Image (cartoon, rainbow, N blue to C red; front, side, top):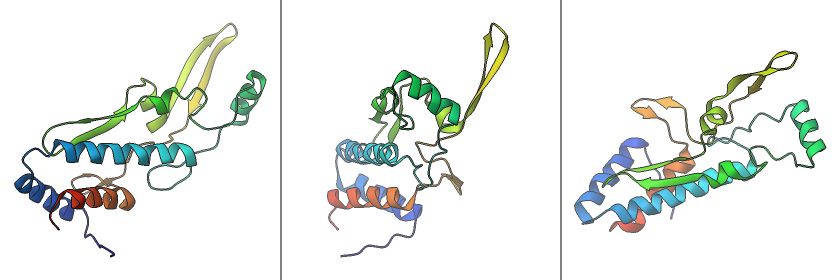
Length: 162
């Protein structure tokens, strides 16, 4: 069976049905959170943002520095700390929040230029944006990638009498 969705309004309709049919929808929100975490992890594995666009490659200087340290060339997976800090929490009856506890996550999500003092002056280090979470703005907020929206809808339908 193939299902088609008309976008975020269909998701809101399903959430309203969920609130009417399920006494405590937190289990559903937890299932959605777990699904969204898997989608973020897939982005790490394939080195792309939630919309399928590849992350900017590592700079030659970064690759050289890693080679000297005996570290691989996997983007955002040098230590695994960023990916391991991924988490979700049920944020009410019809909401789930997915994010990172690593304080460097915003640097990678949005990009940043850091200035470090050295013995010879100031060195600028630019970290390009490598989005791990959806960021595109649309009417009413962040636009979820279609595959993410489909995953949420599928999870909701699993809990609803469709």
